[in-house]
Amino acid sequence: MSATPALFQPLRVGDIALQHRLVMAPMTRLRGDQNGVLSDDAITYYSQRAATPGTLLISEGVFVSPGHGGFPNGPVLHTAEQVAAFKKVVDAVHARKSFLYIQLAGCGRGAMPSILETAPGGPYPVVGASAIPLTGGAIPHALTREEIEEFVKVSAQAALKAVNGAGADGVDVHVGNGYLLHQFLDTNANQRTDEFGGSVENRARFPLQVVDAFVAAVGAKKVGVRVSPYNDYQEVKMDLPNTLETYSYFFSEIKRRHPDIAYFSALEARFTGTDDVEAPKEETLDFLYDLVKPTPFFYGGGFTLETANETAETKSNSAIQVGRPWTSNPDLVERFKQRLSLTNYDRSTFYTPGPVGYIDWPTAQLSEVLVEA
Ligand SMILES: Cc1cc2nc3c(=O)[nH]c(=O)nc-3n(C[C@H](O)[C@H](O)[C@H](O)COP(=O)(O)O)c2cc1C
Image (cartoon, rainbow, N blue to C red; front, side, top):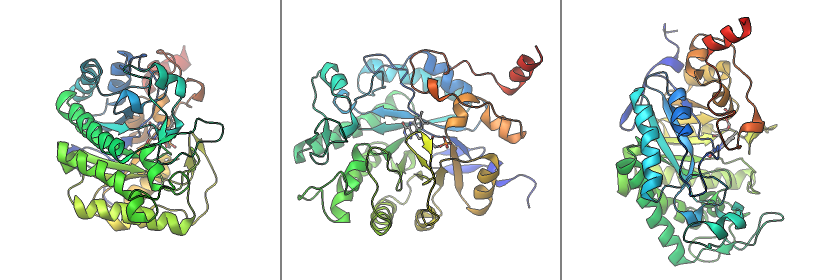
């Protein structure tokens, strides 16, 4: 074994050179204001987590326009003010010699109608692939062809704003967790009979158009794609054969069209929504890893230092995304490097407004001082 474990060896991801393979997973924290502008606390939050030089952070999911939002205080990347708020975050991360990709998304059928009614420029309808609501939710308006085209356009503009406006190192296309693009891939949410529904090629058409538009806007080396093939959050999840077929097609098609894409990212079956779950043994991500290698591949969901080390050692060009533990351990990379214990996360403050449970977690040295005091 080499002296430095694979987890702490550099990895080139598109245009940037990571100094290790721990990547902060995208995590919605709902600390924006009512106009979708990120708070100044976000500057502190991301900067704290970028402390080890050469760290890649993926931002929380950011909506591409107010009409495709749907959560209270969820950030949007559309107006000059929204872009300026993100620029301050990116500058702070760059000052630490680390990197930030901005994850861009459309909410789709899980949006809260009350938020879309009062969003700037609204009211907007809840939308989806088909008029199939979540249990107890609003019946979504099935996007028309023109509206699909409009989403592709507004997404490409958001990607440009992320990279050229806010200075982000790249953009992450959110095709997971039951959000809008995932709704098109999945037969539970998509029962369209036009060229965007039915066959795998048709269901993947819209997500692929968005990926193509991002690449055209900012270049393949600044684009990553995230999926969660086994996640049933927001009432998606197909049977195993359909899942394997759908995601194999989707990733191989991206790779064929954009061989220089920065990375592929996927969530393990053992995580869904905000929780750990039992996962059947056959639900693994290796079929996707094998398809796209040697393009960097980010595994995420329920990793510990031990399992992160194992995966990094056995899967070349992989990185490990860590989510929940990074909320309560701003210096997670150093803690892993030095094998220090972790502070437990607090799910009661995942989504609450304000600094509490967001920017007030101590670093390891400080926690030791606090324990001694
Ligand atoms: C509070 C919270 C918010 C999340 N928000 C997002 C999100 O905006 N986009 C996304 O792709 N995944 C999101 N996820 C999933 C995480 O990126 C990550 O994959 C998940 O937490 C599993 O990794 P972990 O076991 O290391 O926490 C979220 C998870 C949590 C706990």
